[in-house]
Image (cartoon, rainbow, N blue to C red; front, side, top):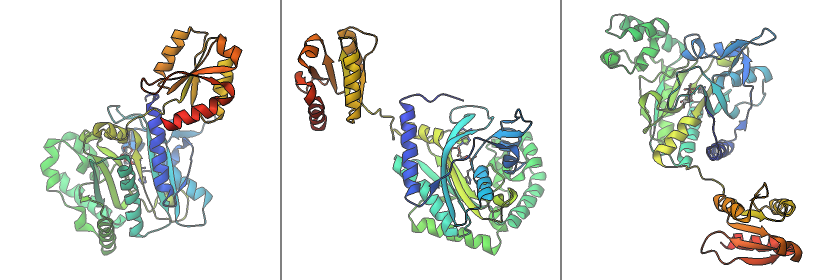
Length: 410
Ligand code: HAM
């Protein structure tokens, strides 16, 4: 877990604002769910996923309740849907916030990480899959990221997926795999396809393909999704080996992979359909689809590509007061109330020390009050940039108008 400090935090806020704008313009409303839920909400993600078996921050609270910090938000959103039963479908929601997984931390993989995402419940239409994928693509485009590859696959209908898993089990049982992949095979044959180990590569390359198991409906759904993405001019590749790490997926799955990141952590975000999850959480049978994008990784990719920089909102004015601080308090409050971003010195520092602070603050002007100014009811206004004009004496009553003119003009 790590701290996010200024100015990085400003960039996080801006990223959230960009996301809120993209999804807000598409009719999505924000949902906020608790950080802690009954552990049963998260075990529904699937007992065969690392997220559930190894990574949950689950504990017993003082009331003896078995709870867990959330490892993701899809299960929480489905729980909220099952609980509140919104009448108007589709229910289109977006979210932002931290998630917790006990993983081995490394660059791009943290135990507390943030996601922004959407979920749509109640519509089974393949065109919705296209809309959802397009929203994520639009978000990355707004950030300015270029090296993002969209990878899509379909896991078929649940029966197709089950038949495929059985075929993989049989195939891999007789294949030459590493010991680690053999252990994975016993738990979740699909995840063997995720192995990046060289020794597994040949067996994986020759493994049966999910597409050989699609029913007519699953194939038609996937065809519509691909045609829809093409129609919108969104580049993608079909990757039959893409399985994603969570058990709840059916039919369409997708991932956005960053070209600059290590292959083990190159998923900037991902999602898919999960028809069945609301039902598993006690609600009515409800189709669902969504995605979550990792904020931490997305910003690493932005750093690597030199886009969406962390820029600090500069101060307009820095108030320097060598007459005891009361004037600084009054002027600073007046400036802030007028919408002029202002800071000031404290601790009765010398004029020189306060001017140093003003310089460091990157403010565009210093507003200075000494004994003479106090007696005359004036202030000195000193532009901080060398070529921004001379210091002027300004009467207190005209300070705001003067500063606004100066700030607008420069
Ligand atoms: P996920 O693939 O587990 O999917 O996570 C989505 C994204 O969150 C990843 O692509 C990655 O960028 C980020 N992420 C995951 N774990 C970490 C970590 N330990 N450190 C940093 N970033 C991480 C889900 O969470 C699903 N709920 C997505 C979804 C929504 N599917 C349908 N709707």
